[in-house]
Image (tube, rainbow, N blue to C red; front, top):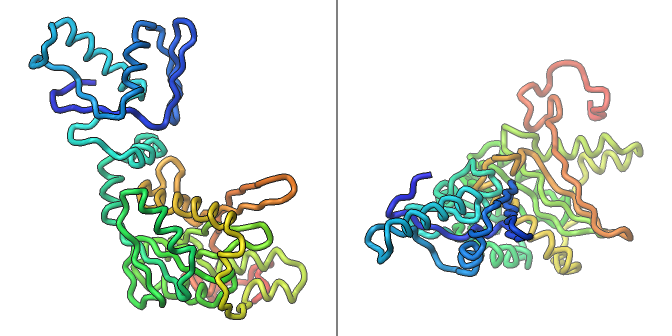
Length: 325
């Protein structure tokens, strides 16, 4: 690593630094480092205690050449062990640094900041649900463009990401959103439904004409139910409209869901699949029962000849489990 005069440093927010005897151990986001130079500990402690940007010393400072060399060497060691992150322009928000850490360094600070700054996010909310304000207030903690909230599905959407607030998984607006998204320039969209029976879901994150679609999800869910009436409801049922804001009935569960939702939005917008983040068609199921919280990750696979998204719809022999044919 070459230290330049314009280079500045800041402390990495995602790490723990501990000392035992003459060993210093740094546990960063994805790596662990061990330093045997106990003499660095006072310098590390001083660096960790500051919240200001740091600059490496240069010849214009009131220091001897040997002092400058030692300090520059110390800065290099701390940067290589991820205690410090460097930049040649300005200090980055800790939220940007944390996202870059999650990408394993594959996505730069500059790219993450630009993607969030220019992100086009649309939230479809017909009833003015409290969950939208909750989500917007959480997103304000990140350097992301403010979402546009609309009351109806747009007819010509160009959003990078669209959320559709629904009363439940069978709300007709989700089927309509699926059809609209397949004919639009929307990059990714996801349904937002309230917790029910101690369970909530975040996602799936549908990439129109790339991943499975919402119809695929319903067909696959119906194929696992043995009772014909319930299976048909799962595939094609439409729920009754509700005037209640069902997100208000379980505030704690809703708060947890919004936190996971906001984090997923950021990874889909900023990391674009790096290091397994933001899987296409992925979703998270969270259940709260007598044994505590259980979280499971899943992925929707496209249904062969899905009538909504498959280019081979209407051709070939029926699938054994595809009961609609």
